[in-house]
Length: 149
Image 1: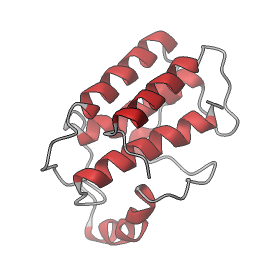
Image 2: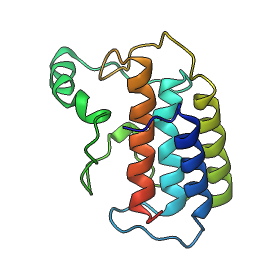
Image 3: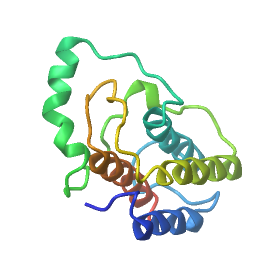
């Protein structure tokens, strides 16, 4: 699995984001392109400690543990997966602002490629640095494929 910490994968993601336009339409799902750009910022903000989520209760943590490997393995996520309510973007957004904010937060995350200690994810628990990088790449790739880039 590619990692957003890898310079080539990072450059690829930025290039693909730059291919998006205000009129790019989704091949599946309900979000518009600007909403998707906003949505993609949230998992990065959580990893960077800029956004907090409620910690999951014991039962949810137990359930999430079974899904955890799917966050960073090589199998693409299926189309139309439900979005966690904390990450839903249902209001209109400015395309250029969201595009610039997403590229900036990806850059911030990429710059931490040598960081060795990360806070546990509120729902999934501990990830290794490699898993954090792969998970972020996989999420971005999923949504960029959603919009055909």
